[in-house]
Amino acid sequence: MAQGRKNETGLAPVARRTHSRPQFWQLARRCCQLAASVDVAFFFLFHLLGSPILAWINIASVSLYLAAFHLLNTRRNGLAIALIWTEVIVHAALGTLLIGWDSGFHYFLLMFIPALFAGMTTTRAWIAVAGLWAFYVSLYAMMWFVEPLQPISSNALLGVFLFNLTVVFCMFSYLSLFYVNNVSSAQRKLQFMATTDPLTRLFNRRHMIELAEKEIARCERHPLQITFLLLDIDHFKQFNDRYGHDVGDRVLQRMSALLTSVLRTQDSLGRWGGEEFLALLPDTDGEQALLIAERMRATVEQDQWECEGFALSVTLSIGVSEYRPGEDLSLAIARADRALYQGKEAGRNRVELELAGL
Image (cartoon, rainbow, N blue to C red; front, side, top):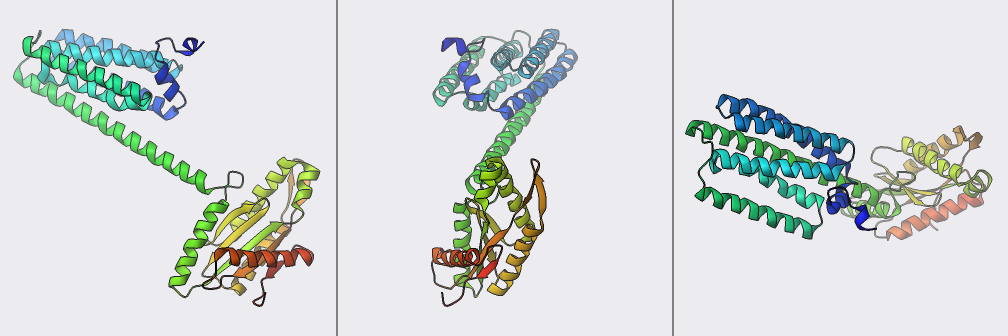
């Protein structure tokens, strides 16, 4: 059964590693288009140089690249890769044998190296690279004993060499740019996943702790004030029990958007856990924080909306605490939690500031 899962060319490792990478196959399609365009240019170049054999070889190469492009579009990736391998190896060998090593056709073989490591397991890639190296060296050694079969003038040979070198430089630059952008994109996605709550798209608890600790460190160096808001959706369990957890999730998402719209650019908001949110307000004292918290509470209270046919109304209770220099972060948040509890006890839908004596 394991053999049955291989593709029609037997290139199972390539398909297994890269079938789920749309960017890789998008790059392969673009490379097919670029290579076909280069071969069209070669067709006219070798006609001008009076080398019809090489000119028509490039027409065959264009056909192979167009076929590989079609196979990639129809997800027959293994066969497409086999065609590309065949074209490059045969074309490089024929070009070298016909007009000589100094033509630079052998440089195109080096284009496979990054693709091998991107498309195979590390062990198989090293084996393939070793085979490619052996072929490269064998071709070089052969040209010590075999004269070019269809030599061209030294000036024409120099022109072909410079053309090949330019194409290889451009394609390597394109590949390098692609992989750098791909790595950067992957790093941004990992960073987003590591710092963001997947449901609300707010910062997660761990990242809020990191932000708060950085802000506290800044506060210890400079005479600045920091205030924390701990927000809790009133009677949230009733939304889940009465309307279902999907509606409960929609409530959390709605609240996240509303609260974010009220906060300032320098403020940070994260999901602290369950239906609780934590807001970090830098350069803000308790009185200023109370005004912001009250604006958040009123915005949520006034928001009347429908979800899956249900008319919903949500309220918040908010606890506020000012950071005291020298104290631990957990103590500052615990004081906000006590203020939140006071608001719950006093009837909910309230903003409470933790008193200095508590």
